[in-house]
Length: 285
Image (tube, rainbow, N blue to C red; front, side):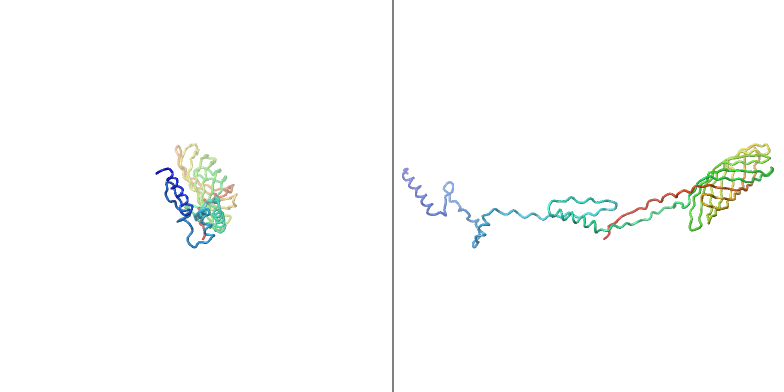
């Protein structure tokens, strides 16, 4: 084919495309799809629909926001406020937290702890001074004196109650026929009444006696003591009686009898605080 024929064919193709605007040639001579063909608005669509179809596509809707569960403070804890999230959902969560916290009633349930020994209502400690007459077989009547450190712990129910105690100190006795002394240790129990006290002490003594020029030494010499009198709290005035078997090495064993007056000066102590009761908290409905 000559160049002239080729030129005529190209001109014919150009005029043909101008006559039919719906048909265009793609690259390589292929027929191109008309703009909007197959993707245009549906039949019967109005001008507004046509304009929306050609506009920029709308962004997809935001997914629904999941609200975090509300957390109520546990027993003995303080729940910190939740962090405020961005947007309306975070603000609603923040407001709901404080609304629930304000409307929730926290009830305290106290559970009594079971203890075997309850603290005493009456706890005192101080000094005890006793003096009186001593009767010893085989020698003349003599005199004795005793200084003790004493403690008392009691519990009352109304006007009456019980008491236990302990004494430890030094004692000395003298007579025209001899003398002696020792370290008595005793534990006691008794009863408390309106301004009154009754008690019995049981104990033993480490002693040294010089009786009729016989020097003796004894350990664990047993004795029993009775007390009865007035109890004014910080001061007690009691009648004191004692019987003792004084066994010893180097001298004969014997029994002596004592009767005297006992004055106690005591400091009233506050009872120990009770153990803290276990507490638990639960959230009310």
